[in-house]
Image (cartoon, rainbow, N blue to C red; front, side, top):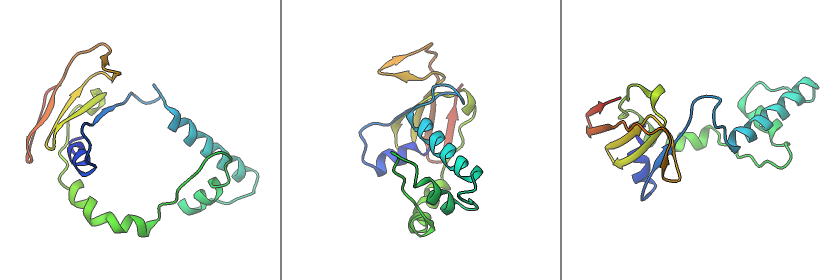
Length: 144
């Protein structure tokens, strides 16, 4: 979460907010697609049509799933960006109490605001504001 300012800046975004919910609550379309693909591959494995022992073999089996387009990102593609991403991941500061946080808004490159509730379409539900801010690149102050 404390790295979202960098993501906003690296992608030249005007604003960045992240709303999410607890496990098994508020699942979206992506979760349904992933579930469909996993079920498709599992059925092919159980029918002895494929053997899946690696991520690439899973992709190859899943690629046949109707009405779903997949993209393979292999080791060479990851390695091209590894040094760049590692430099940023090493600077990430921990934010305590993550299990209580459901909304994050980037304020500046080094500052985020978090809340205990998800906000959608500008409305907060059961709003009890909570702020977490990085006051400098080396210091993170969290209040929950």
